[in-house]
Structures are given as structure tokens and as C-alpha cells.
Length: 338
Image 1: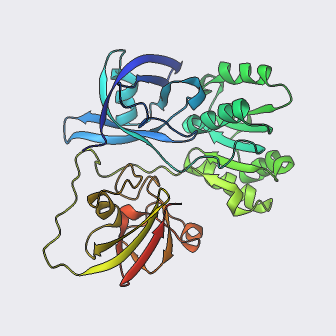
Image 2 (image 1 turned 90 degrees about the horizontal axis):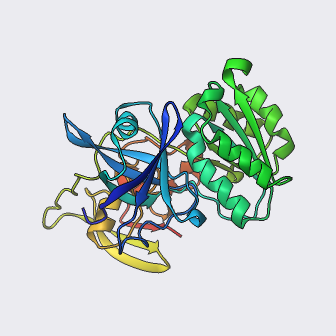
């Protein structure tokens, strides 16, 4: 797979008893490929005795201005357990370049960041970038099981000291306050309802946070949600299925990187697979439609959804589709990545 790069572990930082930050050295010639936007993630190839390897996505907790590429991983399953227990300085691991759409359109806005547990990782990258390069105010509501579970506790305290008047951090400790309900989050978020909101955390927390913001009347376009699902396939080992000669095709128009391309699209081939086969640099990570990295907008035509792992009803209503799981229905289809 052409996009796979082998990275070397430069540093392992113990954040909590169950969380580690992994800093990578980027090989010469690959720096541009690993330039990233705050909020994006990397996909790592984790060795497996049963399948050879599995793919796992981990958010970048570093900020681009820091000049390093760092993911933070909390031990919650096989993949993250292996990263936390086995990766050491000098180890090598195969990685896909940064991907993901959980990014800020502008760092100059006022932010409301809602995170729980390891959901702090992409939020931390956005927070630091907004403080360094933006001009607005940032409020972080961060929920954890107990005080010992707070990832980046010291760094957050230092940032509050360094940015008085711009950064407010509200810690929610479940062992003392109970699980944060939608009503509780509504109360915390109410003074900041006019801000862009970014949410990341376990599903119950995300559901409570979205309910709170809906009750507060925050427009959907100002609510940004990171969506991660366990990958059932392996993008490191997948190859597109061949297309039979003479297969029926649709006419596909794609706006990508400021250029418009028109190609024939075999009806049995997934959109992402076909774009890559045509040599178009479409974004992706999992190649399954489960991580949202490949998202684009359906401009015209109709496509068939092979699964429904990531999009919600509002995404679909807005024309957002995941090319890794779409085949054409109409004779002409137009999509845009712009």
C-alpha cells in the first residue's frame, strides 16, 4: 500500500496509569505527508497473532506548531493495550498519514470543548492550536472517572496559567460528582451557547452533550462531533476487488483539491476504491466508511449505501456521504471534497 510509512518511536510519555503518549520520528522525505490539522488522527498497524495485523485509529494530541507528531492512547482494548505495553523508544510501526474531519475551520473563533476520558486527545490539539494561533476564548469541560485518570492534568494547568482570561478548564470528576447528565452539561454549557462546540468521548457522554447543546439551541453547523468506530477490516492489507471487463458504469464528476475530474465509475465498485484506482488522492483511513476520514458531499445523483456505520440522519440530510461504502445508483453522480 503506497501510503504506508514506517515510523520510529522517538519518545514514550506516561500520562496516567492507563494512558501513554507516543512521539514519532518522521523519516526524511515524508514530512509533508505527515503535516496535520489539529483534531486529526493516525491509523496504526497493530500486530495480531490471529490475523497478522489489525488497524487502529488514534488521535494526534500534539499541535502542529509544536513540531512533533504525537498520539495519546488509553488502554481500553487489544490494540491500545498493545501500544501502551509494547511500544518502546526505537520501535518501528507502520502508519497511515493523518486523516479526519474533526478540525476547526478557523482558530480565531471562541470555542466550547466538551471531552471525556481519552476523548481529550483531539480536543487537546485544537485547544493548544487555538491558544497559540487564534484570538478567541476557549472553555474546556473535561470529564473523568477520578482525578488520577485526568490525562494532561499538569499541561492543562500550565496552559491556564499561561493564558489567563482566554482559557477556562472545568474538570468533572465522576467519583465525586457522578456521571455527567445532559441536564448537568446543559447548565455548564449555557453561558457559552454562542460558541463553536467540539465533542469527543465515550458514546453516553457524547449523547448527553449533544442533547444539552440541542436543548440550548446551538445550531447543528456549530456542533462538531468526533466519530470513531472499531474497524472490522484492515486498510493495510485491503486491495480493491478487480472490475470485470465490460462492466456497466456511471459517469462520475469529482471536485478534489481545486480540480474537477470526470471518470467512468463501475457500478459494483465502491467510490473510494475507484477514486484511488483512478490515481485521485482522495482522503481516507479505514477504507470501510467507519472512521469518517473519507467524507465528501453528494452534489447530484444518487448512491447506494452498503453499510451505515458513521453517518447520522442529519449528515445524510446534508448530503454527507462516506465514499468507502457507496456505489452508484443513477447514471450520473457528482461529489465534492471542497
